Image (cartoon, rainbow, N blue to C red; front, side, top):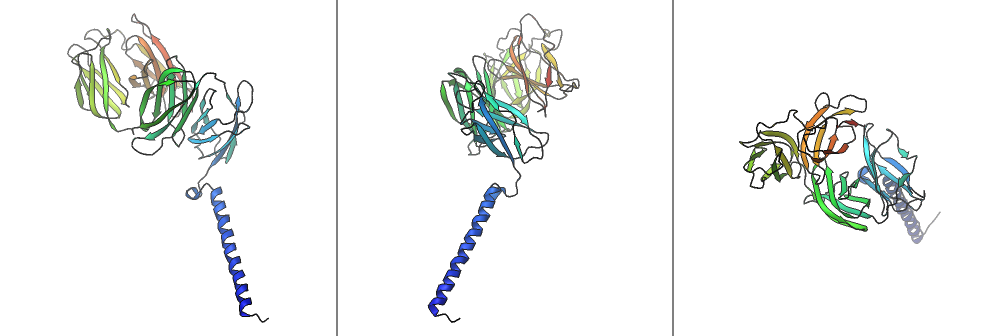
Length: 391
């Protein structure tokens, strides 16, 4: 077949157009496949799709716009109260944190265990949120100090002066949301194993309460440590006591207070010495909280070496040896003592009368807490026991 020069150009031009159309189509398909696998940087990375429903606990109606955070991954429910979320699959023995919050409803938070080796999982029962009228929602963002690095899976708590405690976990983008918080004043507390604890006073009003960006210091950062040394019997300040932490010393003033600069955060040994008192040595976590240290006048030790004691057992009844037991001031949430259980799961503290929170942590098990009151008059509490449940 004979073609003119113009006909040949037209034919070749059509072929070129078809060639580039084919290239563009293939490129588009490849990009669509890449998006389906989780993005260019996630090629080949396994994921698990979670699905569930959030409902009003009183009416069973779906809740739209609820924030759902599972192991740091965040999404919202649709108009049917449904959510779907892709997360990195947890290990077989791992429990992961789950938080659901919505204005006007109490926060739902728990640790959940998912079936291993499955590409998808649908929660069989709906998550029920209890309506909470005239409540506030506290939200903010967590970042590493002086960086833009966000902090996910941090445990965030609001402890109101009225005694309510609302908890949840932050998302990987640093956002945390706690709804259904009673109005008034209280403490906002942030805890993460890789960072120093953070506490601040907040006022909660009805509706939104944005506390802004909170900067967290990595564990190991040298910090200023403040505290007070008190007489264990009179609960009066002790002047002239020598406090030693990580080899650095300070002398308490007339108010029993001391300050030591540049103390490495983390686990440290604390020693207190005074000519008129029995020496004190204890191991504690230096995480930014003020220390309250009690020392006993010489010759006045009690008949038993503790005023609070108990046994920590695992769910199978066996003793939880090496569990970390913290004693907190119930009003300020400040850590006052820390110890570990012995081979029999036993722990003890020697402290004066007052209100305390005892917190127990043990790897692979849920954190447990009890609020207790130690009465005046030499009362000894010997049965503050715990049975830990697996995560």
